[in-house]
Length: 161
Image 1 (tube, rainbow, N blue to C red):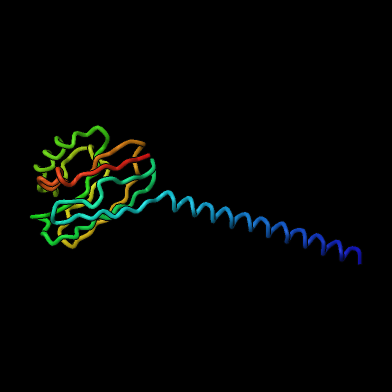
Image 2 (image 1 turned 135 degrees about the vertical axis):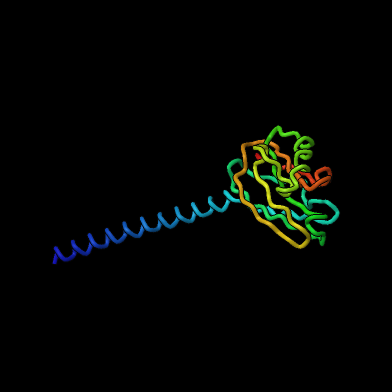
């Protein structure tokens, strides 16, 4: 009888330990999932036929995954009123870059080079496009639409802090 009670006590001890380990694992998984959600930001940026973005300032944290959706809420054909989103590296002269972009008609006004962090394709009225990229290090980064003559009105900043 004493042996039987000892065995039951040991079984209860192992089951109790196993449950507490499982409980800790579940808590760790829940915490990890929350961290993963915070490591991604989803941004919706709307553009229109009046050559405007609806936001001038976007924000993210360094290394954060940014999923950006650009919507063209207007009606204009992309060859007449096309829009895109181009995020420039720090220190890039926006005016110089925009002049190069105008000459890149065959690549939807995206010039060759390594001056961009991320960009979307050119879209027309009623269209949307989504891209993902990793937010760069802390700083202020300019974004523009590179369709000819749009960048002066269609620009903003991504603030990474």
